[in-house]
Length: 385
Image (cartoon, rainbow, N blue to C red; front, side, top):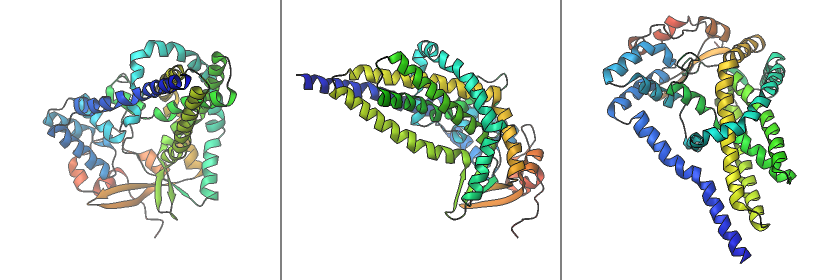
C-alpha cells in the first residue's frame, strides 16, 4: 500500500512539475499569433527588418524608414517594434515556462525582496573585482593568448534597440530584458537543488537562506560578466572555423552545466523523496515556488541593473577592450547565400564614429551596399593584405 501511495504521489508530483510546460505552449502560440501577428503585413515588415540585418547594419539606423514602412503597412508602432525585437531577441519556450510568475507576483515579490536587498552590496563588490580591477578583460586576454583565439568586434544588429527613457515599460523593452532572464533564473533553481541535495538540512528556512546566498553570488558574477560582454566582442577560432560572440560562448558553457545539472538533481531529489517516504507533491510545489522566486529576482536584476549600471559597465569594458586588445571591427553581411566578413577599422574608431539613432539612412543606401557602409565609416586598408 505504501508503494502504491508513493507511486501515486510521484505521478502527481510529475504532473505539477509539468504544469509550466503545459501553460508555456499556448502562451507562446498566443504571443506569436495575437500579439506579434501572422498576417501579410507583419510578414512583409519582418522581411524588411531581416534585409537590414543581412546587410550587416543596425536596425536603429533605419528607424525613420522603418516607421514609414509600418505606417504604409498599417501596423501600429508598438507592434512593429515588438516584431523587430522578436527577430533580434526571440523568446523561446524556455521564456514562457516562467510567465506564470505574473499570476502570483505579489507573493513572489514579498519572498524575493530579501534576496534582492542582500544582492546589492554583493553586486557592488564583485563589480569592483570583475570590471574596475580589470578581472574580466585580463581573463579574455589570457583566452586570446593561451588558446590561440582572436578577439574582434562586430556591431550587433540590435544596438540601441531598447532605451532607458520614459518608454521603459514599452512591450519591446520588456521583451529585450526578458530575453536575457532564463540564464540567471535557472541558476536560482540550480543553487537550491545543490544545497537541498548536499546538505539535507532539517530547517527549510536555513536551506533557503544558504541557497539564496549561493544564488546571489552566482547571479552577480554571471550578470555582471554578461552585461559587460554586450560590448559586441566576438571570439574567432580559425582552427575550427568558428565565429561566436563571447556572450554566447559564455552561455554555451553555462547551459549544459546548468541544464544537465538541473535534470539530474531534480530527478535524483524527486526519486529520493518518493523512496524515503517524503512528500513528493510538496517537493514539486517547492520547486515551482523556487523557480518563480528566482524569476522575480532575475527579472529585477536584469531590468534594474541594466537601467542602473548597464550602460556604464558596457562603456568601461569597451574602453578596457580597446586598451588591452585593440580589436579590429568587422561587418558581417549576407547576400544571396554568401556570407562576407569585411574588416572596416579599429574598434575605437568604430565606436567613436558610430552612427546612432536619428541618423538618416534609406533603403537606397541599403541597395547600394557597400556604399551605405562607406557613408558611415571610411574603410581603412585591409591589414591582412
